[in-house]
Image 1: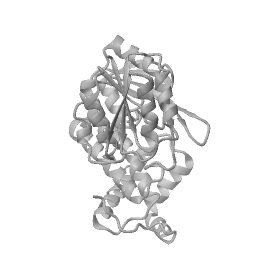
Image 2: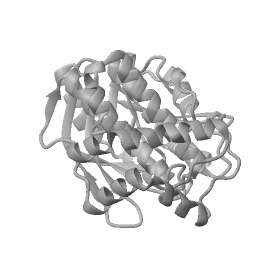
Image 3: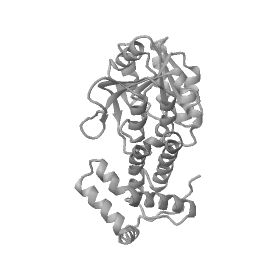
Length: 326
């Protein structure tokens, strides 16, 4: 068996049929689909069981709720494929997604193959392109573009040679931004990167997702995760420090532009770290990124008029309540 497709399932009964139907329609036939029920309380597992009955390539594993990373780890331990792909249960894929990725992987003995995607949701689908043509990426380019967040860290628009993923999910100490928290470790193990210039994955944006409805605590945690990646690049790829800073900056900015500094010591220290980074790097960020006039003005105002901006946030009621980063 060449490919194992892992589908974590948690309370997504409204979307799971569309997801599994898109896997069932794949023109690439040599796969198994491992659905891992992570303690769902809706009818999602019952729907998954229907597909097990319909097609012997589908398997269902159930566990108590342990989070996305543990669900993937358990499924990976049961997977038999040479390559591993992931599909989120509220998304769906093009009929030829895994055919395109697997043909590229097999023809080039690739470690990682990635493609583009379409963001769907309340508005019209928006295509997300990374490069213009099919290409083999050097490790240096792949690591640099990942650091700058030009290559996105999603698990679901990629397939991975099985050995590349070993122990990757064991590194995670978070239940948010799991893909972002481990992708640089995965890329560091790979050498042969391939890109398919097709939009083959349909990602469903949900405002009620963790980051879609993020509060200050989650933004602080998000910045801490991004900072950990930055530290990884500082230690292992110091020549890519600029790219790493470009990737870190949006996480600092989304935190500091939307929330006032919290009072609790640990949260305050993390916030002030982000604040200092913004002020020390925003000019370079503007010069390297296509920043709109409105955002550029916001950055300048924040950097040079911090106290009035924070006072405005405070009177608008954005000061945080008690926080715990544990």
